[in-house]
Amino acid sequence: MSITMSCNIKMKAFGATVLSVTLFALLSGCAPSGACCRDERCDVSTEEECDGVFRVGESCTPNPCAGACCDEEGACEAGRTAEQCEGVGRYLGDGTTCDPNMCVGACCGPEGQCLVINEPDCDGEFVGPATTCEPNPCVGACCDETGDCTVTTEDNCSGNYEGGGTVCDATACIGACCREVACTLQTIRNCGVTSGTHQGFGTVCEPNPCGGACCSGGLCDVKKEEDCLGEFHAGVSCDPNICAGACCRTDGTCEEEVLEASCVADLGQYLGDGSACSADSCLGACCKNGECSVATQVECEGIEGTYQGATTTCEPDPCAQTVTGACCLSGSSPSCELVSMTACSDAGGTFLGEGSTCSAGCPCAFADDCPTASDLCLITLCESGACVSNPKCQAGQECDPANGACVPTNEPAVCCFGTFCEDNTFGSSLDCISGGGTPISGATCASVPNPCLP
Image (tube, rainbow, N blue to C red):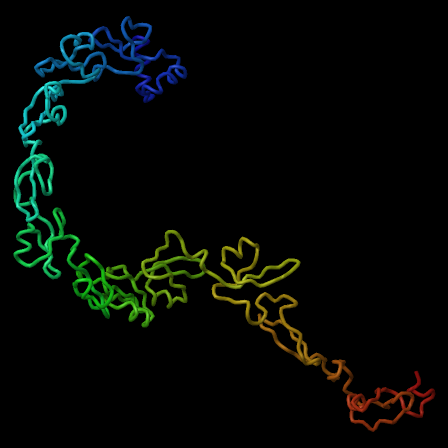
């Protein structure tokens, strides 16, 4: 195998193009190949091996070294070089062929005559290379103001010219004809005979230009816009009924042709105007504790999940972000926040579960979660997530409501009013305090020294 052939195989494997062949040569060490032209003969070689005109990166299919040559009669000869065609006729360019014959085409005369001739010989309008006179591109269907059709040139048409090569068949010169809301394709003349209103040449009946769907109270009728007292939808039919739609009931069943207001009032989900029921219309994503499953609304609520709505899916997963609840955030400033499970986890908090709240009790059991009791003889503590008020004083003690002080419940020996001592005439220490005294136990007023002295 020659070095040139080996490099060509590598280049094909590499997918080299004319633009990339030089880069390929630098990367592979191969000399770039291309078409080598020796007059009309073409061979693939390297530039060094080529003793003619080298075209880097080009192949010999089609032959870039020669092309089509047109003589004065319009005859076409392929495989000629520009030099070989010079003096003979017109050269159409490197790589051109004679299939089809690009030397001749349709030539239109002033009265619509058509001849297939050499372009330089055309004294009228040359339609284009390789064009023909079948059908005649020089004349076409001309529609007058009544819709009558004649075949003539564009210059001689005083009405609507439908284009070169068109004919006066059953589809010519027709348009949408409106009789009330009914639409048919007619000529202007025929539309007028039936007291219709013609919409113009080339207009169609789909969508219907004569009327549309008129929605009133969920009922759908095709009417003219000026006759519609409800919501008008131009060019739209009532099949299907676009004034109502499918409704997913809370029990998972689907009902068609229900008004949106009626569906919503019954706590259903409206699927849109003109919608219909299918086997999975009322299935949707159900989120429970961050997990997603597909279920009806009643099935989802039965497992205490959160229904995401009819036609929703688990791809992408809607549950990780939608599950919200109380999140306990510890640290220098402990707090309880209502966030998604994902956000709580990202913040390093403790998620208390879907639907949990921060509004009642002490869900996080932080020391300052519970408010101070207004009663000085009570103390509020967090017990099992709830704030519970308990008596401040222990057994054998009584609480002074004035300052919240706890005092013994046993009867004092004496009651001191300043330095004045009075033997116990009070029922309890609290009674002594209530009377403005200070209870002293284990002494009598006869004791020395006076128990009431400081």
